[in-house]
Structure formats: C-alpha cells, structure tokens
Amino acid sequence: MHEARQAQQFGYEVSPRPAADSQPAREVEGRMRAIKRDADRHARKLALLAGVTLAAVLAVQAVPMAIGPALAATVFLGLMALLFLVMFAATRGSGRQAIKAIEDRNRLLSGHAWQVWPCRVEQRAHERPKFTAKRMDEVIGVESFRDFRDGAAGHRIHLLAPDGAVFRTYFGVMSDDAWHGMADGLGAVWVCGDLRFTTLMWTPGAERMWPATPESSVPELETIGVTEDRTGDRMAEPGIVDDITRSAARSALSLWLG
Image 1 (cartoon, rainbow, N blue to C red):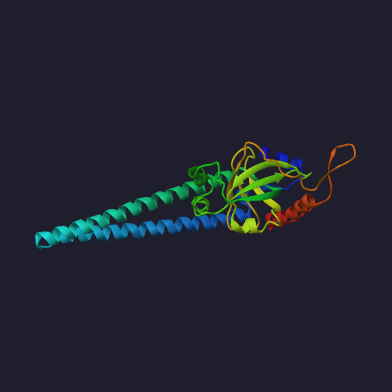
Image 2 (image 1 turned 45 degrees about the vertical axis):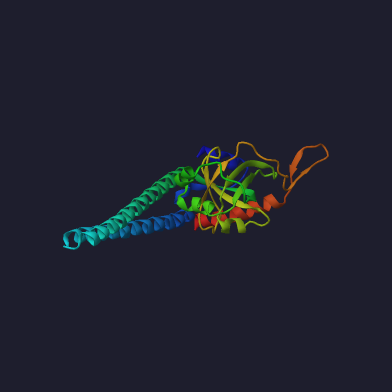
C-alpha cells in the first residue's frame, strides 16, 4: 500500500487493513448486492412473461380460427414475445454489468487502504466527468452513472496538504448526503486507491461510494488556514485544516475499531 505513503507523511490517518475489511465497505457492498438481486428478479419475471407469450402464440396457431384473426393474433403475440425477450436481454446485460462492477470495486477495496484526507469541495452543476459511463460502471456500479445522467451535479474535490494548499484535485459525482455534510464545502473524505488514478471516495454516513478521477492540472484555489511569516516562508497555523484532520481521525478510528 505504498500509495498511502503521502497521506502518512502528512500525518493523516490510513486504515491498518484493506478498505474491504472495514464496516463501511461491507455495508455499501450489501446495498450493491441488493441492487443485483432486484435486477435478477426483474429478469426472471421478464423471462416468464416471454415464455407465456410464446406459449400463447403456439396456442393461437393450433386453434382452428378464421385465417385473418388467427394471423393477426399471432403477429401481435409474436411482437409482444419479442419485446419481452429484448427487455430480458437488456436486463440480463445490466445484471452482468452490476456483477462486473462489484468485482472491480472489490478488487480496488481489497488492494488498498482507506486514506482520510481533509478536502474542499466545489459543486459544478454544468460540468461533465472526464471518464466515460463505461469507466464509471466498471469502478462503482450503475447507480453513480444514473445519478449523473439524471442531472446530479458534479463536484471538484480538492485534497488538502496540512498547510491548506491543494495537493491534488479530482472530479466525481458525490452522493447528496456527502455533499450536504460538508460545512461550506470543507470536510474530510475517505479515499481508496492509487492517487494517480481513479479512486473510490466515501464520507462516513454517506449512502454510497463514488469514483473520482484526478485532473491533469490543478486550478487556482485560495489557500485555507495558511499564513506567511515575515521571511516569506509558508507556515501552517492550527486552524481549519487541523480541526478537520483531528475530527476525521477520531471518526475514522472509531469506525475502524468498531
């Protein structure tokens, strides 16, 4: 877990075990598996409807009726059966996609620790993620993409160094409860993954994790909790970032130990 070295050098909390072993990951995993079960149940219903409709087609063909009504009924029921089969195939595809998303996410959670970073978040209602829908689904599952597709705002997430300067910036679609839990856009975020690539993020109590992709360039952002002494050297004062870090550390330790 060498990718967590920077967080440790900053004095930020890093989970002693892989993220998959934490209670939050297990809870989110349970919700994702419930989504998969619902998709499978829906697929079975569509398959049953398709089978019943096909049986009706065969029955109409077997019943001696006037050729006109029989042909019309056959065509109608055949089209219905085809529609159900198409819906079944689409649902099965979504189910397979959900399974792959769970597997990909579990590999990430199993191979990396949680890192707890202070952050500043900016909501970007009209911006789009730099990763594709397929990439999002591979990392986190279909519910994140649906949130964004349905008009959910994107967020620029700035991880902060101890002096309040921006260390790295990511873009993702935070869950609403995570965003509203930030005080004036300031708070702490749990990060899982290599900081050079797409990571999973979460905040304690949030309904879901979300993928976040690093931006190639960090935009200008005012420094938080930083002053300069008379020699011009940059100094961190006990302030907002320190308070966030201490509070986040207490919360993380209670969840990891609990």
